[in-house]
Image (cartoon, rainbow, N blue to C red):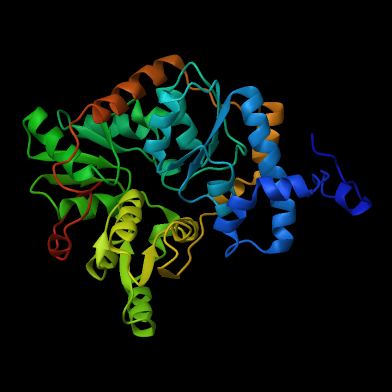
Length: 371
C-alpha cells in the first residue's frame, strides 16, 4: 500500500498526493516511456502514484477503465484497459467480465456502455463531463421530427443520449455512417433518410451517397472551430505534412484534406502509412496518444481541446473507483429501446471497404434538408 505524504499546502487542494516511491517509479516505467514527451517529470511524480494505485484498485474490485481517444496520455496509456472510440469501448465493456466499468470519456458514452452492459455498474468520474453535440437534441425533438417526416427512417449518431437513441431506428458511427444510411434506405424502401444530430457529419455523408439526407443543426464544438484557413496555414508552414480530418468537421475541411475518417481510421492510417509529418484535425489529445505508437512520425498542431473530455483526470478516476461514484443509470424502457437501435447497427455486416470518406466525392456539393 502506498503511503500519503501530507503537507499543509496539499490540504488546501482537498486531497493529499500519494508518494512517488522507487517501487512506483519501476512499476510505471513503461507508461512513462510512452508519455514522457507530453508529461513533465514534475507532473509525472504526481501521476505515477495515482496510476499505480488505480491499477491496484481495479484488480481488487474487478473493475475496468474505458479510455477514449481524447483522454490525456497519462489516462490513455496509464490506466486504460480498453482504448478507442466510444462504440468500440462500449462493445469491449460488454465483453469484459469486469463488474465495474469506469468511463474515461463523457456522459453519453457512459450511457451507451450501460445500454450494452445493463448488469454492470457504470461510473463516470465527473457528472459535468457532457458533450455539445449530444446536448443539441432530445428524445422529444426526435419524436417531433418523426411526426414531420412519417415513414422516413431515423439514423442516429452514437454521440447522443440514450433518450435520443431510444427514439430512433438505428445508430451509426462516423466510420459506418454511409453504410448505415444506405442500409436504412433499402430496408425502408425510400430514397430519403434522417441523419441526426451532427450537421457536418450529415453533410459529409450526403456527398458520399445518392440517398437524400435530412439533417439536424447539431455540432461538436471542437470540430466546428476548424476552418479552411487553418489547413492553408498548416500547409504553408509544413508543405510535406499529410492532413487527416474527422468527418464531424465542416465540409470545407474535408475538401482541403488528404484523408478523412473516424478516429480509428486516422489511427490506422498513421500506423499503416507512417507519414513523416501529419496533422490530425480533431481533438488534440488524439495526436498525443497516437504518437506514442508512431514515434517516427512528427505530429503537428493545431490543437482544439474538448473541455468536457478534459474534466476527466487521474484524480477523479481514482475517486470514482474508491467511492464507486458517480453511477450512470438509464430508465429500463429507454435502455431496452436504445439497445435495439445500437444492436441493429452492430449486427450489420462490416463494410466491404476500409472506413474512409472518398475525398473526390467530398469535393462535390450535395444539399441536405436542414430541420
